Image (cartoon, helix red, strand yellow):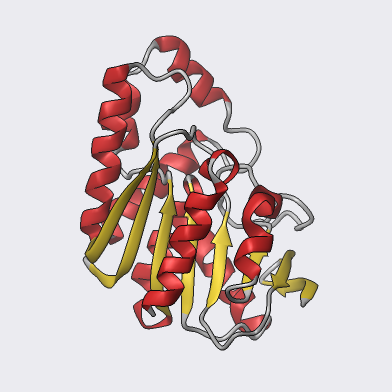
Length: 241
């Protein structure tokens, strides 16, 4: 089954696609990284759709979704996703999967709606202290390139505001959590990679039931470099629930 839809929320229409065999298992909701949209999951969607229904969508202003007037911060994105799920009649409980910045959104969604979420998978997700603890250790060239990327969806300040929101709303979760981290990041020194691993390992601590997995041969897009790692994590989560 594949159902494509344009769902009216607040002041714009969001594109979403529901894929899968209705197995009676929780629906998997997938959120892509900064500036990315639903196509970011193409490499894994077919394999996951055998396990359960999946909802992928384009955040406002990306892919096939209309641009909205709300600030491009995680708090607004979580509200918009919640409205999308209600309007599209996608019933909880949900397994949330977030890549990179999408992981920030999914962590906040799990904190905001704890009774609707039964599992969380973070795919090389951005830690809340990324700027202070990680970005500051990188070369000027890396930092400049990083700052210049914020033109697709919200600006640098909105992105950093999202990390601040994540820090402020952080609560201990009591749902299964799987943290997947990239073990072969591009342009990282040995020290940078070790720091990244450490920060990813610490994300595991946000749940009383957390697991941390390093995708040894992956750069940032684990779903492209080692799709089986992402599929296996989702399968494990579905089997747990």
